[in-house]
Image (cartoon, rainbow, N blue to C red; front, side, top):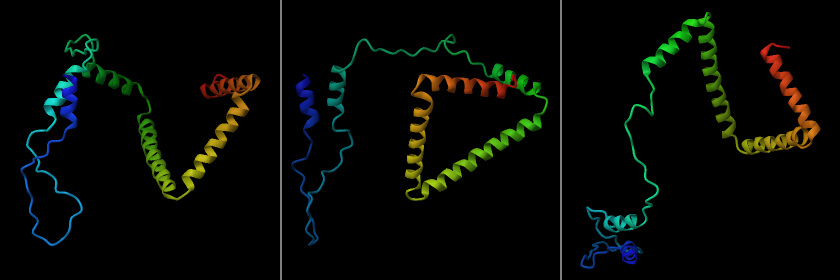
Length: 164
C-alpha cells in the first residue's frame, strides 16, 4: 500500500485531452500549464502516507481542566496595584521608565543607521570577535585569571549593592 501511495504522490496529473491554441505569432519556449483543479491533487495520497507514518507512542491530548493553569487576572492586577501603591516616588519610576523607552528607541535608530553603512557592520563584528578572543585569553584561559575575574565580579556586586 505504501508503494502505491508514493506512486500516487510522484505522478503528476496532467490532462491529456486539453489543447491550447495560441493566436499570436510569438514563439513560446515553455509549454502551457494545465488548468487548475478545484480539489487539491494529492489530498488522498497524502492521507494514506500520513496514516502509515503515525507514531502510536506520541499522542498528545488537550485538557481544559482548571488545575493546570491557574492564572487569575484579578489576582495579578491586585498584586500590581499593591506594588504600585508601595512605591513612594511614582514620578521617578515613570521618569525612569520613559527614559528607558526613549533609550531603547534611540539605540535602535543608531544601530539601524550604522547597519546601513557598507562594511561598517563587518568591521564591528571583527572588532567584537577580537575583543572576545582577548577576554577569553585574559580572564578565562588560566585558573589564576579566572579567580581574579571572580573576585572582581564579587567586588562589583558589593559595590552596586552598597555593602562595601
